[in-house]
Image (cartoon, rainbow, N blue to C red; front, side, top):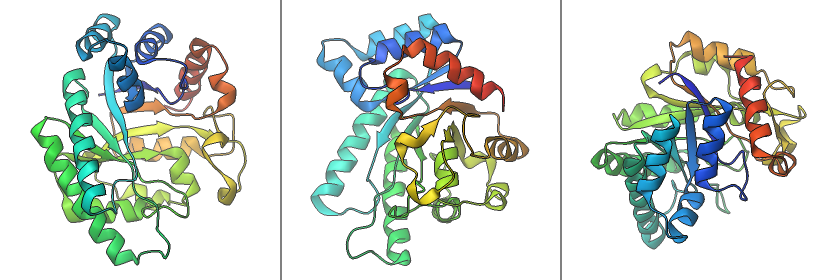
Length: 274
């Protein structure tokens, strides 16, 4: 599935799901990643999933993922049941849209923090259940670890340990350049990744080098910051990865701009490295 994707976080809350598809198509992308909240608003306004799928087909745009089921790996009881129900809903949407992936994100450490063995055991259990549910809908869970220090799974090495224990067909991994950098993941770990686990690559850059102070708002267009984008992309290519590279940004400066301008700049920035 080679090509470029536009993650709908990049365009901001004021741009709806149908507009994300239109913008992605006009700007020259092959894929769009649709946020769950935008899909919910689309449905609440009386539109259907069928209309989104028809629009994507007519526009020549594939829906790459539905995202994101966040904070979903450490909970038990009622909270866990609610997450399972939500995952079921996102997988249904992905199936309806012809999207191969549903992205899920890890939980953050409680106070006091859990030990590493407990974190891994709970994460393995949760992702296994989500993957089995996804299989029922013919889609794949794409796990995106977060590089922040408080995140329970914040390095590529930790994420690979979880995937290796499960080794399931309907479970893969998102490599996000921002989280790779912020968490201090190593290119050597990336070199050891089984390419069959690699679902999506998210591209972004960062506006300064202090990992401890980087947050969502510090993401900038690839090439406009200090992140080693080329090294990460080259390492992914060496794995034989032929999937999509998707632009995921959370910057209010970009959200205030015409989404078409941001999309076109973003595509050009990614093409410099891929």
